[in-house]
Length: 134
Image 1 (cartoon, rainbow, N blue to C red):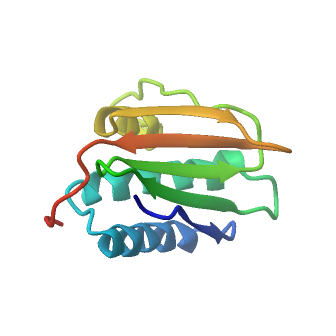
Image 2: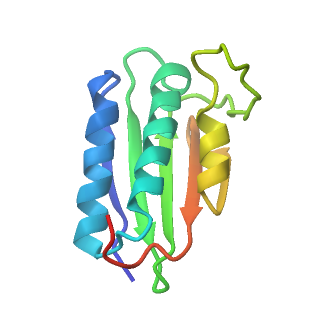
């Protein structure tokens, strides 16, 4: 079993790329690269949602990763607002609105829960994340 690893990111657009890099670094350190691209895409989408919709002005977001003994990875993105995200059906001409649909398609499970004292956690989990493929 791994030790949960987390990092706080400032509310800036470049934090999304930093969150992806952090995720790759953690998964590589754990030797859990089998679903790294799925997990990286989901952290990108969830962090973007936290940045755009979930973080109060001047507040950032937290990315937390954990894995169990079977190599199941749990990704959490913590933000400062309680408004829960909802997957929606984006039109072909929409420039945004597909993030949670991608998370739902790639992850083996996802959801949201309240965070104490404020905010929420949006999580996703990925089975069989072991392996060495990037």
